[in-house]
Length: 279
Image (cartoon, rainbow, N blue to C red; front, side):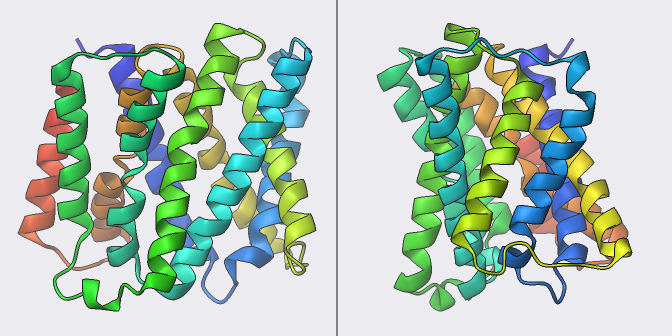
């Protein structure tokens, strides 16, 4: 039987893959920065309507400071993430962005005193290596300029450390729960995006707003499951499993977007799933 600490972050990755495929459709012809604030405010509003069912936040200066820290880190991470994709293709950027779990392992040991078993760490780094193999296209690295490298590394670093204050807030302090944390985080990121980007709150037609709302449901599910997974075991393992999204993006893209089929990618994806189930 697969443990909850394994299947919950994998389920998070599945939802993230659906959200990624929907984002490809949504962002055609719409710059990412123009949709960032609307996207996060929509998700925050959706959860706010449901908040009487789950709301929990024990206020202290520590808990408030940690929520603000998480929002600032994730706003910057998203900024550098979109900055990376402005300059390069996904096949080049994803291998660098996939290094985030390695950062999580390092900082969870330093700040949370988490020391998972050697086999867990080895399996997680094998998954990271396989994701790089899965995501890399021959000949693409020549397009990876220094201007792209630094935002990609910054995004990976920030996403990697974001899980540390989240785990501390959810588990050590027990000050909130997964849906409440994501609701507040989404609202703050929406606010920061609105303040940072001049065109971050553009008007769209009703169809686009519906699509944003639909995709937001999958993103909400993704992050709530990931935050819940952080409370179940190793932070590094949870983040690693939550980042196997390229596996499911590959399958969904082949099935629904009719993208090209590659045995190298399929075998790498199968290997990632096999190792994931052993963690």
